[in-house]
Figure 1 (cartoon, rainbow, N blue to C red):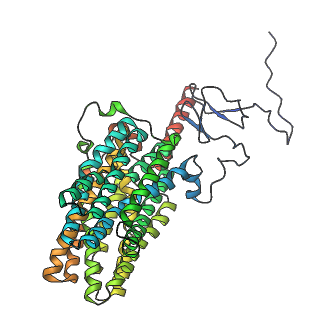
Figure 2 (cartoon, rainbow, N blue to C red):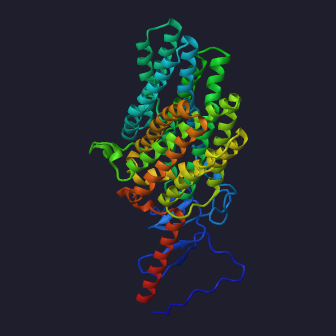
Figure 3 (cartoon, rainbow, N blue to C red):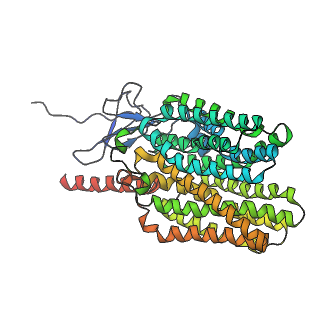
Length: 499
């Protein structure tokens, strides 16, 4: 038998053959393929997803077809990175349009009814009924979405909402009895939570890249702020400057356009999980989600109180028209913080960051108690707004951990429900305090609500544990990557021992 000669070394400067690979890793049952495989040269056991190839769990980044080496170069902006995902820009824009009724419909109904009938009591009762209907039906609609898919559920639900709003407009034109208004508002309360649908799509697309998912949730937090800045101004402006029904009418148009556009994008729609609901019951029973909803009730009460008290504070100083400007600085602070937070690299656990954010939010509500002018109030609310978006981003990441993957949309909607209930309660309580003690004293309502939210977060911190099928997301991407690297190093040492 002729002796086996070692391969001759390649001359200096020579390139490796087209299909050459380098074997690395000493464990006898694990090898890592490195090199630059050409198209169609990868074995079938290699899975390529978003330029990440994996052979038996070993990460591997091939060169991009366009010559840009994704393994060596990084995109200059995380926002560019997430929107490179096919279909991401389309469903994000559709979600923005479909989310506008969230801030337009309620205030539009109040403006319309008060203008047409002159009855603010009826307008307030209809607004409360709308919020109550949404709180009751929202989680159930999202549960159906998780079970049957967004397209099959959202389109008929959207049709019910649009028909109900049309009926409400007809009631104002015809001078219908009060009970007809309430029937239509109950139907309009079935407005689907488009924000939850968009976040579910981000989670489905980016669940293997936690850092990009963090950036996507930051984008959605900023979009929420934009919606709540633009929506009320647009709705009230049209109803008062054009015709009374214009605000709710445009909200219904936005809803129909957004839902139709979103559900037409089948490629990014999350896969339905009918098996996840066979056991019955609400996802609110998941460990930790009830704690999170309680925190959102307190946070919503803070938001509702700040809005009402700020209007009264400006009115007491003879500048009621400036209340919208002061509130805009509150939302502006949140927008700025959300954009910056999306560029950062998250550290620690999501639950830890969420608890820290809630604590900072409570502390930030102390300065509004001390101010005496609108200028300083605007500055204080801007600083307070800086704590909102980062906390909401971490909250969405926490929901993703707390609930099973097949029930994510329902879980996100429960947080929105808690927020809506809190807004209604905070606004009502702040109004009563304003009537008896004045606007400055009423800021104690918002501060107390923030302290309540922080107390719930700290007392229930131990319950914020991942669902069984989310254990792998208990740590963020960088921490998990270090764990995987350490595991491979340990395997290499074992291989050296065997050798």
